[in-house]
Structure formats: structure tokens, C-alpha cells
Amino acid sequence: MAAALGRAMLLLVLLAAVLAGSEHLLGAPEEIRDPENDEGLQQALNFAVMEYNRGNNDRFSSKVVRIISARRQIVSGLNYMVEVEIARTTCLNPPSDLQNCPVQPKSEVGSKARCYQPLPLVWLMERYRHSVPCL
Image (cartoon, rainbow, N blue to C red; front, side, top):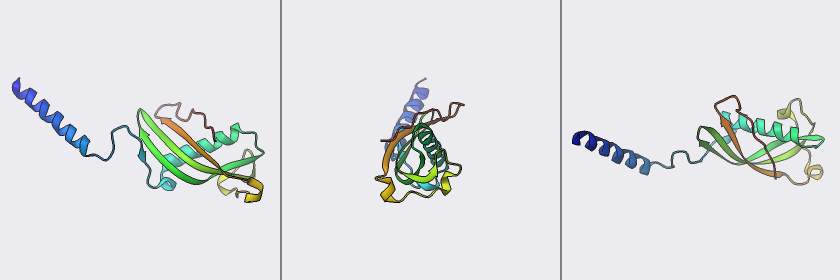
């Protein structure tokens, strides 16, 4: 019994040492170093922009023009915390092919909007249900 307790204590000490030496805490958000090439992030952003365009009354569609920051958090699914700049395009809402829609010239757009929204992606069917406001 003492040997089993000793092994359990050793295991706890080793686990604590591993966790103390890691760069981030388990479950804590971590920066996405290459957001333009992160497939999961791009899927979340495409969905967020689609919902944003669907929910706004603008005649023209908007699209992401720059990813300012992106973090991912692994919980019971994935949460993406993303800050982006969006701008109006020349394509009418809803767009048929947003990727190929050019951004309107600055004189027509005014300023670009900066959006920050956690985008939860869980492993189940409700995968993309979330509101996506833009400030």
C-alpha cells in the first residue's frame, strides 16, 4: 500500500513538473501563429462573415480584409477568439462568391470595422450556432 501511494505521489510530482514547464496552461487560449493558413479558423471566419452579412441590412456584402489577432481555446470543442477588420465589397448582399468580391474604394466605405467575437465550435451538430456582432 505504501508503494502504491509512493508511485501515485511520484506521478503527481512529475505531472506538476510537466505542467509547470509548459508554455501555456491546459485549456487556456493560445495564439494562432499562421491564421491565414489555419483551416479551422478560416472555416469559423467564413461562417462568421456569412452570418454577419445575413444579419445586417446593408445592400453590399462585407468581407474580412485583415486578421488582427486570432487565438484558439480547446475546451469541450474549440473556441476561436478573433479580431478582424472587415470592409464593404462591391458585391450585393447576399454574395454568390465573396472571395472574388473586390473591396469598395475608401471614399465609398468610410472606415473599416474591427470585430472581436469568440466563435465556439463544438464537436456536435450545433457546431456553428452563435451570434456574430461586429463593433
